Image 1 (cartoon, rainbow, N blue to C red):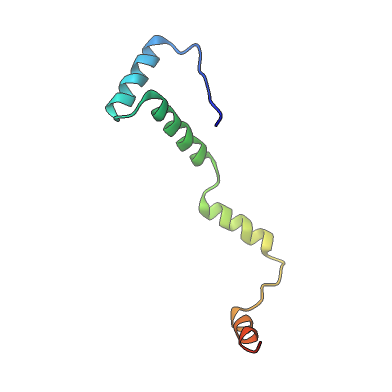
Image 2 (tube, helix red, strand yellow; image 1 turned 30 degrees about the horizontal axis):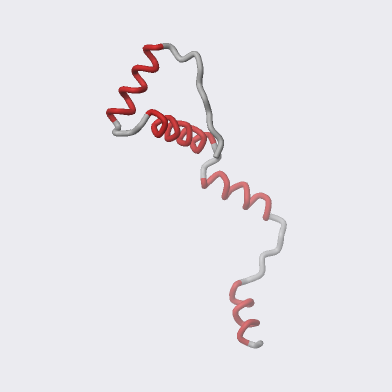
Length: 76
């Protein structure tokens, strides 16, 4: 699994982050990983936006009817 090292963090920020992690009952590493993951997920398109993009891509493709598929499957 990849790792990340941060250098040059001011002491007051380091101390504040350490206290923040402790208040949330997490290690600093666990808290940093959670914050990074949250930011990455929030920067990605929402589920609704992704659905809209897929609908746009599939707009001109014919989609067979479910009822016809079920009937054809029964006739096999």
